[in-house]
Image: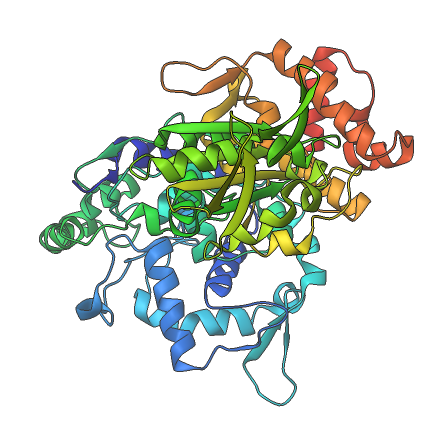
Length: 542
């Protein structure tokens, strides 16, 4: 089955875009800026707007962002009037000053360049032109705040849904996956994202259907242009053909979609299956232990260890212990697990080591570190129950996997031994804002918790100059969930979590320096009454 965004959700998105477009300025500039980002516009990459390949990319951007009926290869040069709509101006479609009657192929390959190059002072603040090569432009990041910083931000969810209005998927994408698709299509920098978009979620729930929306339906939502009163009727036949082409398209495989968030469970599971041993590393609260625990469901037996500064070779590998007044050999936890795995090759075993870097790892593993190469073996001798030496050759079998977790903000331990690290695949687990976008709301949908956490973490990194000193998403996944797994925080519970969990973490990272704390949290660093607290959050996110 192919999944398309439902007509109901798209109509809700359309209505929201119409509402926002009446207040947004400068809408045309934002629209053309997004097109520029799709074709590679940046401060490091000069682009030639006269280049034929750039013109084709411009057409592709307009086709995806604005086409009322998407054009395939056979219709790319079609001379149809009113065939695209700036999604940021849909609310004023009936105004002759806002509507574009020029065919999409002509506008994207000719008019677009003319609008940019003849845009006067406004565009002069966004790009610089090569003095020798006319039409070759480079982004000026210094002018972006002046242009985009003084208008109402638009929820990125709306443009993400609109971009995917005709796209089919093999599974139902989450909100964060659609947003990632949008940012992969229009690769904005973090600064550009923060200036133009908010992470608010005005769509109550994204619904899916087995049929796509018809272009004729979108025409009817827009209504006839002022100068073409029969426009909706004139395209009924063509729209039926386009609808059939959309329906028969090859769907996008969600598992192959590029993600801008933290590593997925499936990705980590794939790595484990391939290489048998990984380290999940990152700041606290980024679901490292959770991912490891979820993967353990695929094994017949799991041993879970917590390393600490006093954890020893004797506990892990083995050695002499005092028993009934005598020294006897003792096999450590790792060797006991190895014995089981080597004796039962049909079963799958998993060793989870939490806080790997809190122990002296080189000392704990000892000579067995070489077994992590997976093609080595070593002979160890322990006395049996009768006191006789019992030698055995040990190796790491393919039915034994190892997942270690490592807290990268822990300032009480040193760096992990490179000899050990090179024997593991290392997966960085950053803050997964997408999981908050998809699963967490606050009562009355007052603001986006994902956006709040993102801004606090951005400030932390900027003030402390350390990407590890951030708050993990797991801090906001502890509320009560409904049957679908969605979490809705009450105002009281969120107030308590922020002030007595999140804020103390910020204070600790800043070594309780009031000036640093204020730079990160602003007025949220103060002790605020609940009503004032939520007013300050809205002000903080502006």
